[in-house]
Image (cartoon, rainbow, N blue to C red):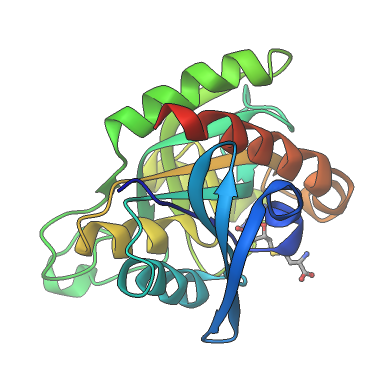
Length: 232
Ligand code: SAH
């Protein structure tokens, strides 16, 4: 049966979806509230994971084990890594990787977790396609990009650090959860996609831009998730 796990790191990334869902039950696990019910005629479990890779990985595993979700969607905000990607625009993951993993001393490329045999975790083609086509309908005023999303336990707000990440990983945007959700979903053989709306440019302006734009950006991403659900 189709059951979609929807993860947002922060409340503002999932609050609209929670408000719109028909709630059947709420279960607390690992200090997270998993809300089960239907949204836009689709079975869903919506949860705020908390910020960062550990919270997001734990949350993903619980969605797989306890709720046996068929698909996972991560919705939220991120910092842009390309000049042409503006605040408010959306990035849909082709794949995701950890930009803060470094085991180069034993011959692994920067970003690769040893003994997994891959640098990045590929998102599900069908979910990418639906997200992309739905975005053009739901958010016609903004641009939608498909590309790599990179994650680490750092808020990126310095030009030099941003440049290093761009040169090393060719990411489209940077955030703090996507790769760990992708990683956990990959290990559990559950198809996933990460959808992020841009809240800032991950440079010296990010400290100012992020608080100004996070709410509107989060709403773009959530609207897209809501509308793509029946197509999955
Ligand atoms: N406002 C929060 C902290 C936000 S941390 C508080 O005070 O509690 C930033 C969140 O937005 C993370 O969940 C991350 O995934 C995303 N994000 C947006 N822009 C980012 C950037 N430039 N670098 C890293 N993460 C970013």
